[in-house]
Image (cartoon, rainbow, N blue to C red):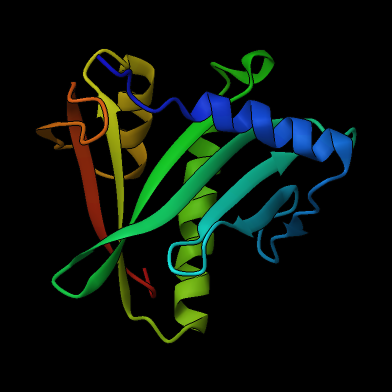
Length: 163
């Protein structure tokens, strides 16, 4: 059986790209130390928010892809990861809340009134469940991960850009 997607793999790849100088994320205007990088196909670009320190170390990242619409409102599937040395320090909650705030800001600039943020978290991933409960919603729905077929929780929240 295919495992669930692990956002930590994206963090490792993102760090390698930063270290090699092959990507150049832009600073987010609202949060110092948070950077934005957009890539992927035009139809479904991937938005990555990363906490990067002065030594170019990626401490954490949140990736988001608009992969669904719920009642004609765009839904961004989020994945998040924290580099090993920075775990258990509240970094995941911090970056996820900041990334959601930046997404609301960007949606407002694009004249979008609302958006959904979603996270699909494996039933065995207790740390990510705790973060999603704090940042997205407290009452997830039991589901099946579409890629792996494994049981997971779906955390979903409708946001107004004025929240």
